[in-house]
Length: 491
Picture 1 (cartoon, rainbow, N blue to C red):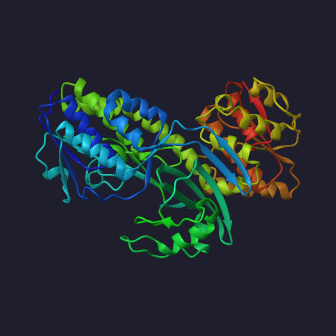
Picture 2 (picture 1 turned 30 degrees about the vertical axis):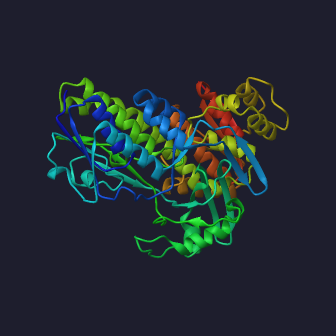
């Protein structure tokens, strides 16, 4: 198809990138971006672009990617618990300042011939365009006012975004324990003299610290920032935490039954979100832009293009959302795992969502995995065949385990609470432990391992998880990560 006039609502990364790609693909098309904020104002600190996203951007628009990479900062990853530290290679990830990313995308959009409008709130209905791209963010008014069958899930934990005026050496995951409970930072450098510090905690800790009070929406939560600056004095190295409308939030996962209606299509956070611990709104939005323009180039009309865009893009988005859901649940329950040696904790982190098999992690970080396996088994592993070696070292399971066959979606919700309560009662009656059974699909097994881990930590006793032999890598990762004591392979 050949669009004549396209309007983009939202001047974030997804909207700007979609506008540039559209103008490059359809030079005669009038493309305009409408952003309610001013061009030099933005909220947030750094954003990250993983290796896979960089490859897609390189294929779609190498000139823009070159400028983004040149402005960014590559880094490895460190996990620190107290005095114990483990480091893994991860320098394929690029962190870049959100302000710099937007400046680059604005510059490249205008260079392609896109018109940029700032400082006025517009709606899809009032725009004179034959195609409207709504890239107006997680709070999208377009989505809320349209027939997009939106559903929003809200996480239990609380988090806030802040920054610091120095560059960390690596991305850093570090918990700190205060008199009120545990706070965890996800921090990373994104440029010379700049780092993002995202800090999260559970609701009980948040309330005990006195943070459950209203904060002006136009200001940062200075009380929380001062508290956290003291709590994270070590990783901050004497620097202060910087706010930018920094307030406590609960993560909202957006799902839409449809991404398009009439001449309007949702893009990026307006259509879907994925938790920050594994997903990136910037990644999803820019990859959406690529997919949408490809569909517009190939389809005969708008309706067909929107349908092709959603058909081709939705599977990848929903897969990432499921990985992000598992990752969110793991991080919300993270403080319960800090007793583990950091190498085993790193294995637990890398395998938490089922996206990184144990064997693959061993290829990129052999020393970390070898140490974790030694800690697990009490003996050094062989050079290869980790999965078989882990599974072959198990003792015979006891015969008097109480069977738990509950199928839950979230091991930490009310259904999970009920399982833990029953397990505690069984332990009080003298039960030695529990056998977890259930469906053989991979999603069910990963959830079963998480539920077993919770029971193991909160009720005690020996825990055994049944799982298909075809999923031996997940079973072995469950053992090394201390999600379970024993496994039993099924057909």
